[in-house]
Image: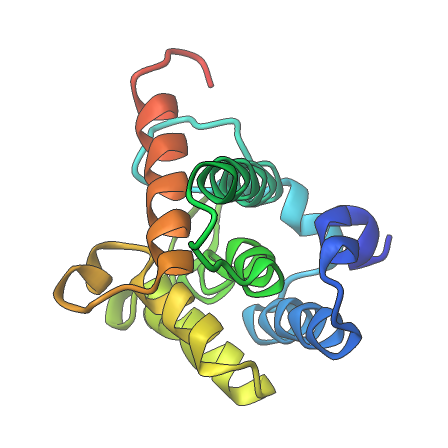
Length: 178
C-alpha cells in the first residue's frame, strides 16, 4: 500500500514538491523506526490512554481534517486572515510523525523507545522534517503542536494544528472503549 492511499490528504497539497517531501518524511520515519507501512494501522496514536484502539493513521487524518475545517471557517469569517493551506495540510499530516521514533513494539503492545525516552515526538518529528528540507514554517508546526510549543509564538497554522490535536486527544481521552 502506498502512503498516498494511507493518507489521501497528501493529494490536497497543491505544491508537488511539498507533497513529495511530506511523503518522504513519513518514509524516513518508517525506515528509522524499523516499521513497515502496514504497521501504521497498528501503532496507537498515544500511549497516554490505556488500551486505545485509535491508530496513528486515524488520528493524523482526523487532526488534518479538523484543521482544514477550522481554517475554512476562519477564512470565511475573517477575510483578511491569511492561512497557507498547503503548509496546514503538511503540518497536520506530519504533526505526530516523530511517534514512529518515540514508540517501539513491546510484546503484544507498544512502549516508549530509547529515543522516545530522550526526545519526545515533536522534537524528533521536527528534526525529520528539517532533514528532508521542509520549510521552517512546517518544522515549526510539528515542534509547536504539543506542550513543547507553549513557550513559543505560534503561527496561525501552528495554532490551528495545536488545537485540532488537543480537541481530538481530549475528546478521545474521556470516552470509554476507543
